[in-house]
Amino acid sequence: MKKVKIVVLLVLVTVLFASCATLGGGSGSVIDRISKKGELVVGTAGSMPPLNMTTKTGEVIGYEIDIARSMAGAMGVKLRVETMPFADLLPALEAGKVDMILSGMTIIPERNMKAAFVGPYYVSGKAFLTKVDRLASAKDTSEVKNTAIALAALKGSTSQAFVEMLIPQAKLTLTANYDEAVQMVIQGKVDALVADYPICIVSVFRYPDQKLLASLTPLTYEPIGIALPPNDPLLVNWVENLMNGLEGSGQLDMFRDRWLKDGSWIKDLK
Image (tube, rainbow, N blue to C red):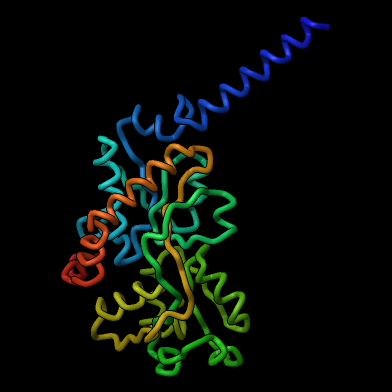
């Protein structure tokens, strides 16, 4: 009986140490994987200006890409940016295809049950991109709740949930990316696109001849964060400390000013 207890105790100790190794940066940790590969793989949509967007030459640029580049530099590894439809990003993180997500992802409880989040590094809100004056001037959804309206939203986004919950009568078209949705507004296929406020503002300046309008103020509060694997506290802690350093040194302010205040990059977008 005594020998059985010793064996059981040894098994429990082995399991405990294995768990600690995985959680604390051992051989099974994401941060260890990044170091061994010499590469940080960041998932992004690549179509959400000014946070992330693709140029005519195929380069992915933006506020979030500057953050990702700073992370890779601090780790001493190369940066690889993987672009994919927004709805595919969390599944890619869960499958280990990307190490983290930087893609205008709002921190919400449903997502936080599947991934760890660091942030917010930016606060946004929902807005309408439209050619209709009454939609651009709407201060809340009650002004459009009882009207027939056709809307577009990014598939898998909080914009989709926003429309389904607060404007349930709308005819909703889901798109794989924002470029497709903006074109639907321009071509009159929908009355408006529901998207994060910066995307709507950038679209107005990006297509100056299309008479686009954006909501004057955001309709919601949207904290944007970095999505990370849920099983690597060391990586989460590392990212938290790096972001605190970028904020404290003024680097984040420089990144924000570069992409949110200076629109010279718009001409380079495809």
